[in-house]
Image (cartoon, rainbow, N blue to C red; front, side):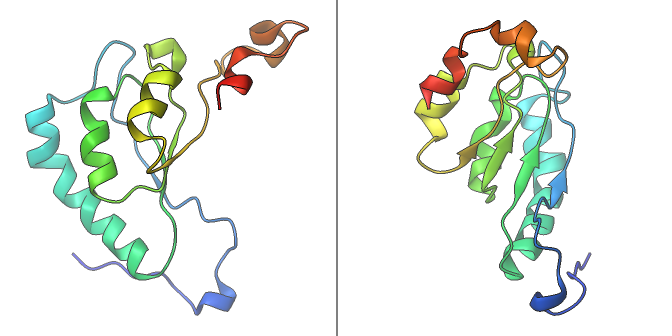
Length: 130
């Protein structure tokens, strides 16, 4: 399988959110970690390698509880991870401690409710954690 990013760099979109996928449920990942490594990781790595060969960052959107996959996702080259889904049990402090010096972390706010419902009238602790 071969992938190419169309057009010269000057004509590419400046917004570089490049890969999206779904790998988790609220309580666990869709695949066992061994299945993820054997089935999903090799194909995703090919896509990421192509993106990186074109000097683009990889912003990964992956809902659900995906702790079991994060080591592999960081290893194959993601640059940013979203949404760190709090409602699926993903904890920003835990993810930041392990991966925060290697990738950009985005999210951890319950997007199913409005910001005022989540934060009330005061600032959320999530904004202060970073």
